[in-house]
Amino acid sequence: MAEKLSWNFAVQALNGPCVSGQGDLTVEVYEKIKVTVPADGEPYTVQFAPSKATCSLLVIKADHYSDPDSAAKQIRCSGSQEIPLHGPLVLIGKGAASLLYGKALEQAPTEPAPTEPAPTEPAPTETAPTETAPTETAPTEPAPTETTPAETLSFVNDSDVAVVIEILAGRNAIAP
Image (cartoon, rainbow, N blue to C red; front, side):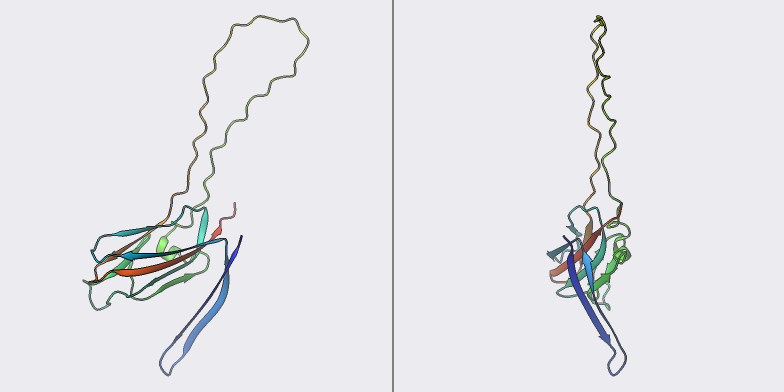
């Protein structure tokens, strides 16, 4: 069932121009995840549910952010590339999340390998019975299936205190 997400933003320079926008985005599924990343400098991985969908919305918000003037006290996020979190990260629209994820959330659906149909027996005919030696057939193994891996984001917190991070990801199905 499709979900409708509403979004809006406004950025204004003091006594200057304003840029704003708003809209709605229909997604088939969304996930909201809230995690606490310890201040230990070790990678903390957040795993999303496996999906055959493309990410069309990615929002990352923290209770505090990196100090842009201190290289030693950084909170970093990485998907396909690493970026410091100096403020909320909001990516809206088809493919927008590829800026952070690369193609991690835009995988083509994986389908089970096709299987050969079982041979059909010809219709019985009225002929004299013949004796044939019994034959053995090797058991057939089911075709292997591939699963879509779960997507991940990693966070590293080099600051002095733990950081609470909220993530919202909206996805749409990939057309066959």
